[in-house]
Amino acid sequence: MGGTPEWGLFSDVFNRRTESIQWGDTAFYADVPRVEKAGFLQAGTSGVASDLDLPECAGASDGVADAPQKESPTPSIDPPASGTISWESGSEGEGDASAPIAPVVPKPPDGASEGEVPNISEGIDDINRQMEEYVESMRSEFLWYAARKYQGYVGMDVTYVVTRNDESLLSIRFDATLNAGGSGQYCRTFTLDKRTGSVLKLGNLFRDGSDYVGVISGDVLRQMTEQVNAGIADYFIPGGIWSPDECFTKIDTDQEFYLDGDNHLVIVFEEYAVAPGKEGMPEFTVGDDLLAGMLRSTSLVR
Image 1 (cartoon, rainbow, N blue to C red):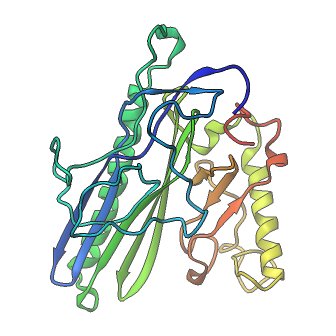
Image 2 (tube, rainbow, N blue to C red; image 1 turned 60 degrees about the vertical axis):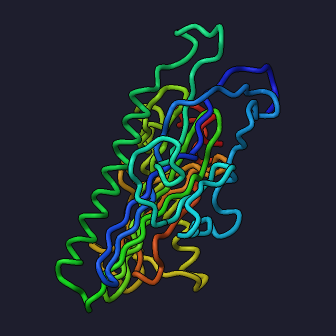
């Protein structure tokens, strides 16, 4: 990073809690990050002003780190960029290797005035609450299927991956896989603007009155059409066997999204929302040139 050094908020997912429910072969596992206050890093230098390294963003390999070993619950020294399910109890505690571990947003540096640093406590509480509520909704989904004893076995894994983490944003994606006779997938994303302390929805990235829904929808439809014509994917788009009611027309105003490590905007769809189940949860990276002029801040997406 170049330019004049400035103090920026540093946040990282290295604390998390895990939970599990099991009887027989039926089991629910969830790994839940928690954002907490930490220290500051100085932007405009090498980007690291402490002995904590920024995690690599998911997508460089398979996007999800290997599951921690059940026999060795000790947290790794480097904060993980992703989480998988383990058997730790997830109970609160201090100095306990199996206690919850969590993300971090910092205290101001010495000499910084209150006006120079945003109060992000409410944003931290908000993103933690929203993540907990999502895991609770997945637990309820699991219990609904378990109560019906689908083929005698129901399993659900809930994992997360940090897709972007820098002085501006912390972006976390959750993926849940349900096995109950067949399999189903679920996705939810959370993005914290560290500069303002706000948990962002898609519309928050854009200026008031901008037609971000129309622009993004047009680019997504273009990509869908290209993939269908190339025979590499199948989507619910006009011109095929799908009825008009089934066809994709536009994204939701609060469509799931995340920012990747290269600051690109990625739109995510739930399974079956825009394609047959074989396509899983489709993702589309929106062209940066299409977003120019609509963004509230060019530093959030480029």
